[in-house]
Image (cartoon, rainbow, N blue to C red):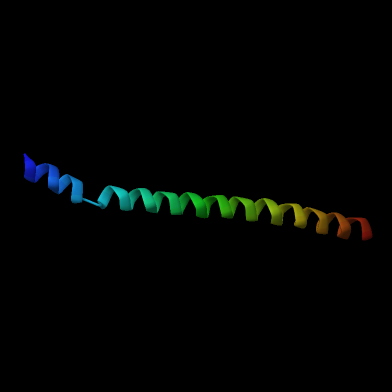
Length: 53
């Protein structure tokens, strides 16, 4: 039983998966923010072009 608990305690695989999950979540948030900002800027550019046409 001691060996099982020691092996479970030393297993870092679950922690690594959590870290990867956090990195993926952070990348997703950055991508969503970039798309929102670019979308707003493009909307303004297209509005300006449409007004001049």
